Amino acid sequence: MTAQMKGPTGEAEGSQQGTAAESENTKRKPWVKKDAAESMLSLIRKQEQRVAKMRKDLEKEEKQLEKLQRAKKVLESTA
Image 1 (cartoon, rainbow, N blue to C red):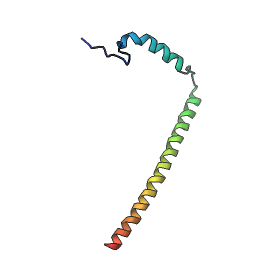
Image 2: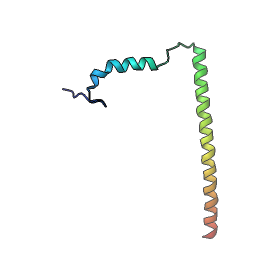
Image 3: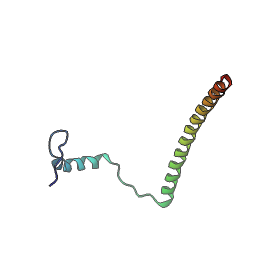
């Protein structure tokens, strides 16, 4: 026996499934088939964006490391 979870309105989830599915269909964009070239170009663009973000994050981390290394030198020179 499985227990039915109640939604935020207090009704069982099963009674809301039909209306939820209908409202999701209206929010989604229609599916458009892409050919192989468009699909590959899309993947390349996404990967380029990921790499650019990683490079930016790496620059931040390198700057932080430089600050910490300078602080380490100061601490070592005073010790």
